[in-house]
Image 1 (cartoon, rainbow, N blue to C red):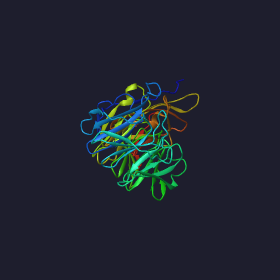
Image 2 (cartoon, one colour):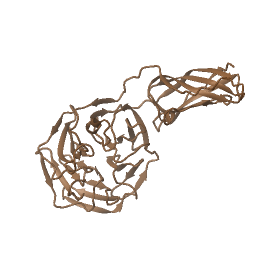
Image 3 (tube, rainbow, N blue to C red):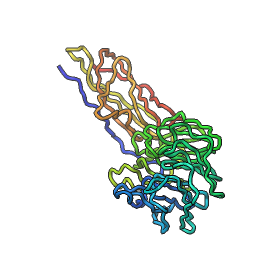
Image 4 (cartoon, rainbow, N blue to C red):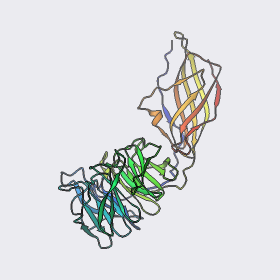
Length: 415
């Protein structure tokens, strides 16, 4: 009597192509600049404060201001310092000055407003304070005023006018449960709050809000978020953790981009003209993840993936005790144009492949890059047949394309 095979492997038999996204790892930020606040000017991104997990409190809350050149990635620590060490703050750029709101630090109320002028490298803290504790809040700029969204005091919406230096809590709030340790950006004429698996669109002046039908697969707190004005780019929220997701605000469409960067929760990002700069993260394993910096320029159009079964092969036998057909089933699959995700094999009713997983959801979570693969399955079926057929199904990673299904391929089953 022969025993059924219990081994399932995934074997790559073709090399992987380079991503069409342009990704460049830049000069690292100073250690500990995760959980900072960032803004983009015409020629640079400024990162304010941050948290250095390798220092003891209160030294772990940083008062530094780092300038990152948008083209070269060169890092300069400015002479100006924040009034206190801060992290979990939010910031906006008005076109002339940056405003930093709230934040966590020693003897910090979370209600502070700090102005930074890069032309003179000077910092000013206003006597006027926010009407709420904005630790863990996000902030957006609509071209005229800033909105501070959420924080530890709840889902408040605060309007700040730089011309008058007046901060006003509006009569309406974000929907309950939103606004704490999430990220905000302005796109398509509205504010977006991203985190806790949701993408929330809100009109700050009226409070009108709606939640996207798409859920982020692994949204922790404060994902890195950058807006090009119409689309949001999100880091640290995919199932793998190294993927970039793009949300088209006008279409309510979500796509996984081909490029991959190792950016973790607590990171910051800003859009700098035609590309994003993204920095750091709080889960440091290894330690240098905390201060990594990337330039990320997405390809304009994400191509639709294509999948095809090139060959199926059975190596089967009949178990004398059970009368079942058992053995090995192999399928060769070609993935072209773009990666696919969450693949599944649909076989004919006569022989049903059974996957024996050796790691957690290895087939559901695997990302297959462009290339050719051979997938091995275990067969354990009571109903053999002379002809077996199979289709390969995979998630395109793009809500506009949805699930992909290959053409059906059939083969004679040798007994």
